[in-house]
Length: 329
Image (cartoon, rainbow, N blue to C red; front, side, top):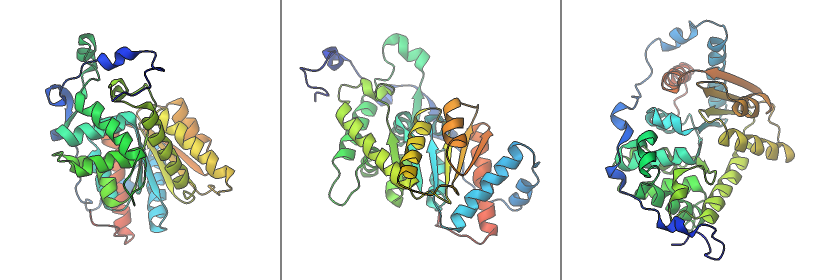
């Protein structure tokens, strides 16, 4: 398959790159290290309330309260996740919150989609770039590149009755596969649950774009469809919550443009809550997610693998105390 018209391709040697089986690659992250998702712990809400009402303690409590209020009022809650969130073993946590009905839209970037596929396919992800790059092998796992190309194709050409989009294409690809760990795929689980899932690609920034089957037209079309899905979702986000976790550029930029579309169409977002959770403050995430959009913006620093389990447990404890049952996990 040719990704470009030969008459337009300035670098036809891309077709000569060599790939290798994903199973042969050593990866840094395995599902044996992933988080567990215990039921709400007795008295956890009281422990959570005991945190100081100062700085991050106060803001984290406010975020939990706003998520709980949104769910009790049947308003949407979305998580925009950078790839690192999956690399530190938090897929089970996200999936649990999706199954319980707490999260009803998941957005990710191209790198997040790559990790989602590799986790589902072989239970391992995150290659050692320092080792792979000097050998000319960085980013050339055959199955990963071919599958993401196929997901873009499926996302552009859905079956009758199915919604188009990159995230939906990847989710359907994994859901229909025999991947042994597809129950740990955020995209596949979103398809099973019927909730929104979008992938926002940045062409040239992801390893799969080096694969000979990568088709820029399909990647662009599938990602553009997902941007339209995102705009539709944001237009209904007043009273809801948007949480950006660990993405510094692509998702904050996409979100701000979706907010601009919603405001241009006359949408009231003055009661929207936005939050940025990351290990350090990044300009675009802080300005595009926390400061510029209407509504209330919150910024909380912390390691994902510690902060998100605390956030999950607090949300579930508070919802349980409020009598909200949601869906079965």
